[in-house]
Length: 209
Image 1 (cartoon, one colour):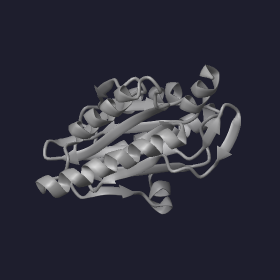
Image 2 (cartoon, helix red, strand yellow):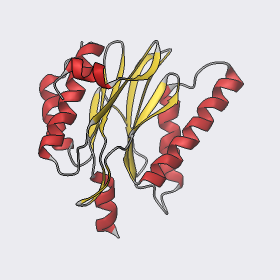
Image 3 (cartoon, one colour):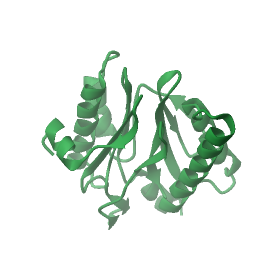
Image 4 (tube, helix red, strand yellow):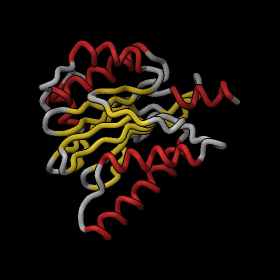
């Protein structure tokens, strides 16, 4: 069981980068379990609210359950308080979900990012409920390769345009080197104008895919 869970958890590559004007979330499209490719068109980037999104690495059912709960609470917060839920609060809620289910843990690794009244924010929440605020982060089996690109290219004053390029390069490098990563790349930006996925044309205009 542990071997199966480990393969489910790590067969992917997701990347998050916090830039000066927003957050970039990027992920490959392959769903795999070990050496088995289950799906080659998986959306691992999910919109939580107009100002917030996350990336998924892990069991599909567990990850989708987390997405549904976060969307519910984000909508409830907006309706009750007439303001978007803070990104930090979303990250803390995700942590509490993992911690509450530690007896039967969610097999997932989540990146939560967005743009609120405090600016851009990016958090990594692992299956044990640990929360870390990050400037850049990558998860999954391709993360060692992706980290090589991120550590070489990231700077403190990175623009959102440069962050898109670096994120795409990091996932593309993981696709080349990691069997659990592949079948295309999705990328989203979240800034003062909200969450939006890039079209295929816009992705190809940034780097050669």
